[in-house]
Image (cartoon, rainbow over all chains, first blue to last red; front, side, top):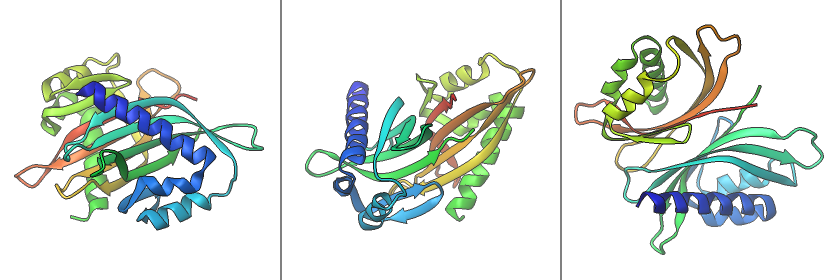
Length: 125
Length: 123
């Protein structure tokens, strides 16, 4: 059971950042109307607002490199919390940015997962 | 209580307890609680507190830089995402860390930590 949670968490994270880095508009498939994102302190709710934000970040090309992925089952009906740390390389920038991000994934009726909660922070210094 | 106020109050209480009375953290976890500490998975209040009280330092001080919170769902849970610095006594440079808590309500009207994940942020 624990291994399953870990596998799902890892697979999700890989999929999420791959989409982010290659086809950012497709992230809309991973959020619902109830989803919440806090991006560097700014709060957004709902797939439309979240995707608008992510599609309008001040850079075109980027690449996420993941250092750590930690997963745990959350107490809500099949939910999974995933805690990620890594670095974000922006095209044209010499130094990558370090970040931490947490996702709370909830199961869909079709047997996959969507992001119910998403919190992103850059790690400075 | 407003969720932001609640999460700030929790975070202050958690780290003050950690820094001044580490065994007191036992009240904040239950048998079902899970901690992943730098990749090591621990379950249950007693095991968690054993881990935290046997970390390789005596005195420490957490300074919190950011606290973000979101409600986690219909059960009344709260996700709290913290970043900050951890100063160990005798060490010149503070360690940077990120930590997430998933708090669940108790019947008595307070909260306990159901999920806890801690990671140092290396440069």
